[in-house]
Image (cartoon, rainbow, N blue to C red; front, top):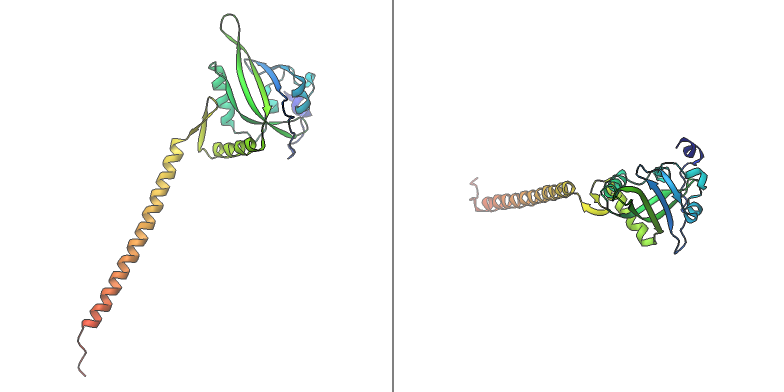
Length: 200
């Protein structure tokens, strides 16, 4: 891990596009240690096989990816399910690339999980925009992930409803006050008109 961190460059705002039809594949053991990478992955990420073999898979993790995504990833694959979601990864030179990541468990003859395989493809422009919106909502705790699926955060929705109710009550109260003031002023004008003229 320390060796890879030393060769990693600082994050830069430069995107690496993944060619159409190219598939990036990696495999890890059950602890997330890399034991296989294909040539397409090395071409995009910029690492050699020697630099990544035996290293933890999170060395390619981009800091802008919400931790919620990786929490859900591990919960999903450890339960024996496949996890699919958009992910922003970092390259060796600090650049980044977007992928739709599909991570699945691999079993032995006894039905035990022994490895995980990750198969990725590039994202379209629209998919990247959707992924950015999802990351923002995850950071704001508006949604959460479950098995790679987006779940509305009920507490966030309750807060939004309470805010809407409070705003509505404030607006309603302001309108009511305006009406009462108008009524009172109107009553005062009428009362003054009804009063008899004073005698000198």
